[in-house]
Image (cartoon, rainbow, N blue to C red; front, top):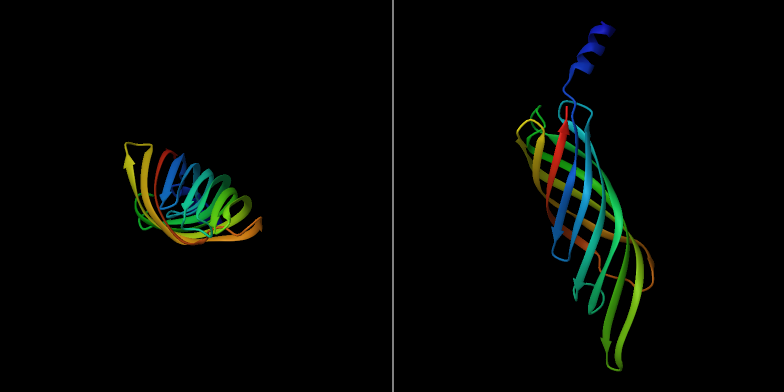
Length: 174
């Protein structure tokens, strides 16, 4: 019985996707490299390394906030069919180390400064995976979550709800 169960468990289709991803949101863009590895017939663990380019404009705590930083993500994705394409849902947490240059206009002039922030960004994501041939996957997705500044060196900068649209192009190893 154990040998039969083990054989069935290892006979499941496993995939590994490695590709490039870009996400855009109203105040920035995140290009990155994405890795996904299946652990069941419908579930994958995901990871991303990326670079965040930020332009909060006057939507943050100051009249102008721009910056950037490196970071990454870890997450989970579930497909609704056994072939790792079609509709999917997922969750992930991003961790960013950003440097924000800010400017505020006051009655006595303009104040400027720089803040270094550590950001945690949990999101929920819906997507649709399209298989292009045998090994190419194109996945557009929408994500909603919160950008939370957990550590700030300098003055506070913008944070809050975030809506992201993204696309991933990956090569699938089977």
